[in-house]
Length: 316
Length: 176
Image (cartoon, rainbow over all chains, first blue to last red; front, top):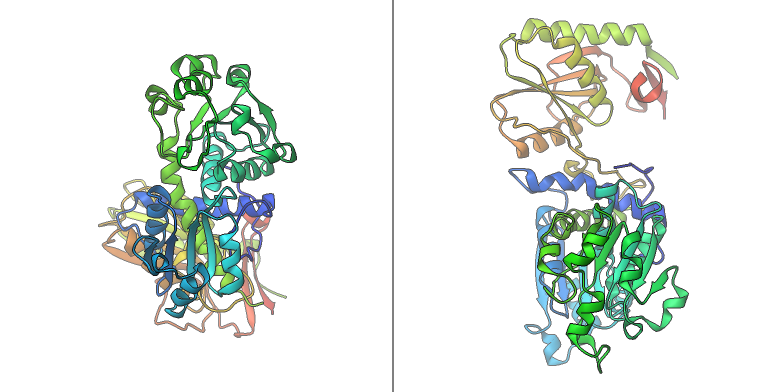
C-alpha cells in the first residue's frame, strides 16, 4: 500500500467527506494502517486516549457501527458512555442540543452521533465544544463507512486510481452511497450508480458519477461492486413491483458473478438481506471482502478518534 | 551548524556499539533487535547485519512506532504527530530485546517504547543501544551501549542522517 505525504490534520470534527481533500482522506487511511495490527496483539489496547470520554449518541438503531466505535474508543483507553434514544431523556422531550450540552457538562471530549435528521452532527458542532464525529445522519453522509470501504479497496488493490466501481441498489436512501461517491471519486475511481430509476436520488445529475439502470450491461467492466441494502424502513410507497423482481434485475447472483472479472471485489456495508440484493454463495464467496470491511472499520474508527482528539490539542 | 560525526566517524561509532554488544551478550542468546521509528529503525538494521556473524541463531528484527504511547499527546502543541505501523511479527516473550534509537535525550521516547514493548509480550531482558547520548535526561533512563557521549546544550538539536533516508551518513548539531 502506498504511503502518502504526511499533512497537518486540523479538523476536530468529522462530519462528511464532501469537503475533505484527497490528501486528507489518504492521511486518515495511512493513520488507520498504523492501527491495523492491533487486532492481532495479545494486549489490544493503547493508552492514547486515557482519561478522555467518548459518548456514543445513537438516535437510530445500529449494531455494527455502534459496537465498532465502542471497541475503537475502548482500544484507545477512552471511557465510553453509551447513549440510546429509548433509554434517555430524549423520550421525555429533551432536545438534541440540550442533551449534548448536559453530556458535555459531564466532561465528554468526543461525541459520536447517529441521527435520523441530516445535518444533526453539523448542528452539534455549533453548540458544543467537544469533537463531533458523524456516524450517519439521515440521507446525508456516513463518513467512517466510506473510509473503511476505500481502505478495504486500497488494501486489496493498492490504489483506487482508474478503478471502475459500481454501487448497486437503493442509492436514494443511502448515506453510505453519498459518502462513498465522494471518497472513491476523490481517490481517482470511476463510479457508476446502478439501480432502478425509482431508487436514484433526484440530485444524481449533480454528482460526479455515471448512472446505469441495468446491472447486466455493466457487470463485466467493474473492478469493485458495492451492494447496498434495500432500506425498507425508510421507504414510502413502492419503488419496485416486488422483491423478487428487484432481485432478478439487481441482485448479485452466482450467475452474474461468473460474468464479472474473476478478481472483482464484492462489498456490502451490512446488514445483508441474504437472497435479496446478494446471494449467500456470493456474500460468502472468494471475492467477498464483507467481513474484512468490518475488521477494517475498527482501525479506521480508531484513526478518526485519534485524529480529531489530536486536532483539539492543536494550538490555534 | 556543527558537524559531530562525518560519514567515516558514523561508521566507526556504529562499530564501537557492535564491539560493546559482542563482548557483553553471549553468542547463544535468543535476541531480537527492535528499532524505534524512524532513524532507530535504520540503525537497528545496520546493527543486525554487523552482528549476524556473532550470534548462533538468526537475529529477529522489528520496528516500533511509539506515537500512540507518547506522553505529550494531550499537551497543547503546534504540530501533529503521525501514526505509522509497528512491524514486529514475532513473539518477544523470553527474548533479549535490544532496543535501538539514534539519539538519547530526555528518555521519554525510550519510556514510551518500553511501555509499547511490554504490551506486546514479556522479554527476558531489555537493553538499549544509541548512536548518540546527548545528555539532559529527564527520566531515569540510561543506554547500555553508547556510540558517542556528548553533552549538548538544551537549546540545540542533534540530528542524525543515514544514507538510507537522507542520502548521507552524518550527525550534526543544529541551533534551534
